[in-house]
Image 1 (cartoon, rainbow, N blue to C red):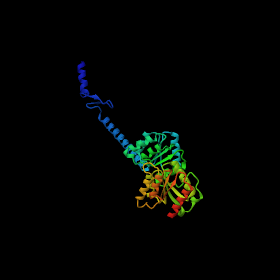
Image 2 (cartoon, rainbow, N blue to C red):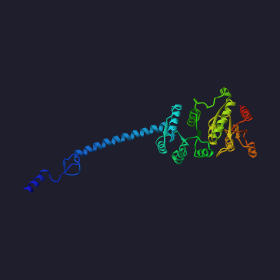
Image 3 (cartoon, rainbow, N blue to C red):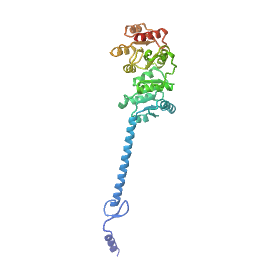
Image 4 (cartoon, rainbow, N blue to C red):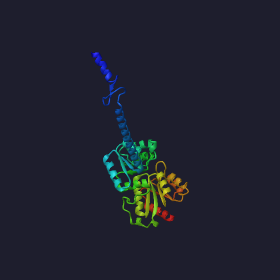
Length: 333
């Protein structure tokens, strides 16, 4: 009786069957019935469309970010990072300011979007970040500005050896920082910012009597002192540079009446810079005055034998030195 019932049940269910893994219906082969397979295909199609939409949105956002560019500030001190960001957002409202508080985030930002300028802080792992940037072929030509509270020559030399375009000492006035960043981005001083020192009445002389001076000195403190002395004595528009390479770029891009260059600079000193100017047909008629604090007779003789317009003592340029600079400028006019 049991065997007959088993045979009848087998015949009634149609032979070898198994339940569908999806809905439990009896099926003869496979894991899923036709209805479940169709349902899974529809679900996979919807998931594929969603993934494609997410991918397209991500690519579009990446393209928008790359088109926008921006200024990347890297600093692991949150307070300094926040202050620098606020200063630049207020002073340069048209530029996008991006921040990163660690090297990994900074590198990911550089990879994922276009960046016009990177601002690092030597006091907060800035040198390590700078080396990482320069070691990567993708970023070796990226403009970098370094901030630091130190003026030690070895640190400054290391920074410029790694290809930094500007070095700002802290504390730095907000308008000075904005002007320097604007100059890096656009090749000119910010129109809304003025030097930290008050301008004398002579500086408001009409443009035709305003002298255009390029001041080159790798020592930031000496550079500011020399700039202030010239501003207080002459009706002049002063452009500053902290390396011979930066000075040559300015000379090629802007009209300059006279160059004052520090003799003792790393990599390319004042006399070598003078030789570069003389070798350029478009620049060789611009007078170059060497600034030095040396009393070595042999060095002074070498300057006198060169094609320099003369030399003055730095950083405290004497009255005689200022008079000589003014005389050289007026001969040009």
